[in-house]
Image (cartoon, one colour):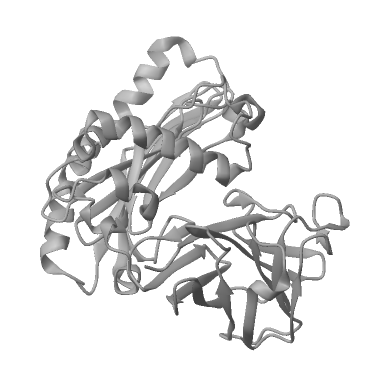
Length: 418
């Protein structure tokens, strides 16, 4: 009989999460992870039945902010206590007592990955991803966000951040931006987007981010298992009319003149987006792309669902790209689903390159004029790396919002400068 195995490892990583990074660069580079695992295996007839438990949580080196790190460490204590109570040996014999001795099951496992997901001037958010397999047709995977004030008060639930009247308005705002994000018309049935029924509901799982509230629906909450998880962002500027100045969300009431965010796909690359308001309806936007893979051909694309004409984009500059071109609405552009060029529905800006040197960074910058009378503009961004028939994309095929070319896209909202 094998004895329980206990193992621990420390490794550095900017994030386990692929997608937008809602923490500043110094926190991204400082966040590493401590991983501990325990396992028990028991021989059963012609096989061995094993149970494995894994916990990963963040450590910060160097420490970006001692007070905030101390708060995070205190919050992580509960997860460590729960993990300490897990007993793989008990789980194995419980499975056997439940009649699994004659099955083909050879391993069950649970894994908990905790990351610092978001930091704002007033709040911090931990992301708890739980996955595992305990028999049956498929495993499980769920995400839980927990929001706290920077001094550790919380967790902050929606009913603590908004009064009853504001919660009703929040639901209306959230449905409006959900429909905008996934291309649904105001009166279109939600079942057309895979919902079980046509009644919109707020996700209970919400992350407070510097750009707004990120709503996350786990599998089975609103759609079948095959549809996976669903996320969308309700931007900060849309929330201003319902925010109490004394709320932890009061920082949303300020409209910054500059804006930065980062996107990452593990083992593919990292994209930084900077925007600076130049006047009442102009932004200077800079995209900086770094690849972690050797893929000679590269395309960096930005689409603008509210814009049709090429003259909305001006003063285009690039570093490292060979060509850049504007494609107005109704211009033929390649669509990966149709495997051919189709007419674009809205304005597209695309830069391309045939060579990518090791550790090279490429950049695309332009001036964007917001649509006349609009309170914001919507940007959809994606990068494609290709070598021969091998293609890697940012976002990867599991993330992002589907764009007009069939690829996944990162989505950004730029509010009208004040």
